[in-house]
Length: 236
Image (cartoon, rainbow, N blue to C red; front, top):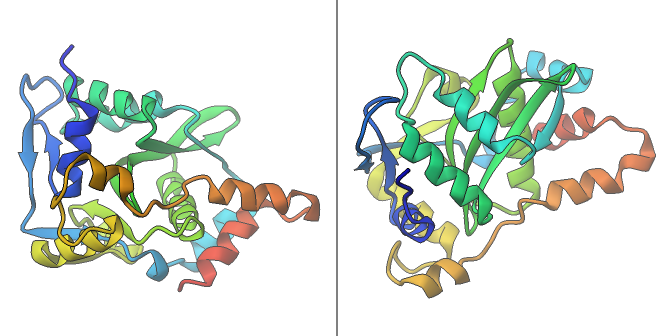
């Protein structure tokens, strides 16, 4: 199975480019640089009253990085998908080396929703999400945004705009504006201006900061969903 080299993948993300395939069974991968880019401003997440209620209800158990491969495969289970076998294997490898993450939603020990993406510097690049029951992907995204906020991230890239993302606060910007935001999130004078040292020296967000916050509040008997709702309520 062909696998895109992790360093090549990260270099591509550092200049605003990412891979796609034409279908699940496609033999080749191509590189994409959209003229218009969807981003979700981390401090402008739109927390609807119904989603706030769902978060507080504790209806879903939410984890991170506990079922990365399963999340990718569920995201690929669509009639039309850009995730072929090479992309699947490449992101699993990127996860293995610590630069790809997943957020999972569970109900009665069943994986019913989630998302995955790539972390580089203070940027997170959302790749795909899925939902087998109503609101599961929204809950996963809400937890991701809260995690990025607590961790000091500066950019949440959504690649292409959808009505689902728009309803949660995503906006569409020109590629040139996106590159400026990306450069700032990576701490670079210009995206891709340097090589390995730039990638390794990027001002990094802390993906695990939320875990420490929740662990510190565990003795207060406040459910984690309430903490997430409070964090997001402060952004909207």
